[in-house]
Picture 1: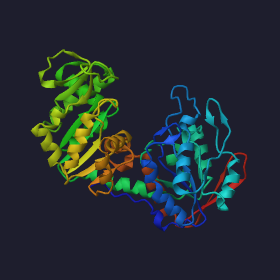
Picture 2: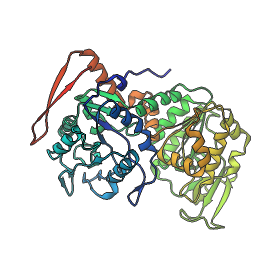
Picture 3: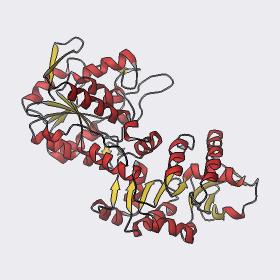
Picture 4: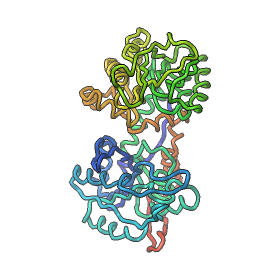
Length: 459
């Protein structure tokens, strides 16, 4: 059994007139300033309604995209990674007004910190003149993805804004300041979405057997850890995407365009591991080879049988799985007899090659007995786009669950425990500290160039 973790229940927290800082995962698709997939936003609405119903005042924060250049440490502030489309969506959806504070920033290194300009907004929030505050993209802040003094300074500044911290961002597993820092200074809770995600993650750690996992991706070297753990613990594994191509290249001694040397090295180790667990990895032998990455013109792609390709052959791009693979008895058996199915996979490359993904999802849907757990933004978007009817029915089907973060699940699997996710461990550690100290605590935190902010926290 997966371990039971203890995180304080927000249901019984006193939120009346308290400012509640909520870390959400609203890193969603935006086109021309319009939210195109609001799944992650809508999934956090229950905790926001609860906080408001209990008299709490909302300050929200999320990351959007990757505005920081890892090589130069420069942070690009632009409309492409702004929270404004998210705020516009919330204002329209909830009919309440969220305001985005404006902070001074450096053209190269982002926002230096939270300055006193936010004080007026906080006063308006306390008076009920606005419905909430939505901080700028957390990754715009200098210190968000840092360690040491910069990180500690931003942690104190964020904590100085609020009385209570709530983390409802399961998909944001990285140990950044906004996901960990406030737990050092404020009473901290897991939001409803976080709790639900953890509960369903346990279905992967302690599955009803047999269990099948379907995993695809573009980088084998980043998935070798969780894939190895999965192969050891589950009954069946199906691969797709570039990681499957790398596996085929090594297993059958062929060459396939678009595979890096790092992926080939990782695939060699993985092929050795599969030999220790014969029968667990279900190969999909019928693959779609294409002459181009961006074309599906007649005659430029073809279906190949991997078993009939000679060793040493140079292939072009493998961009999809043929439906012929899913008609094989051993493949259908694994898909239809499994009682737990975890899917973090888009089988085809680009929007041109979608049939392999659609056929896979449709076949999984026919297994009405299995717990079907889908994770990853691309996976959810593909399910919603390719099988809209099945997707809508699945939303209300207890046999289905859609995680908001596929990478988070793979990280937890690799660590072997949900406590391997540092933001969750930070919440648990916070709860342990509060349990040890049941007396009223007072914490004084200073924001640079501002008055001291007195925070009180109670267990």
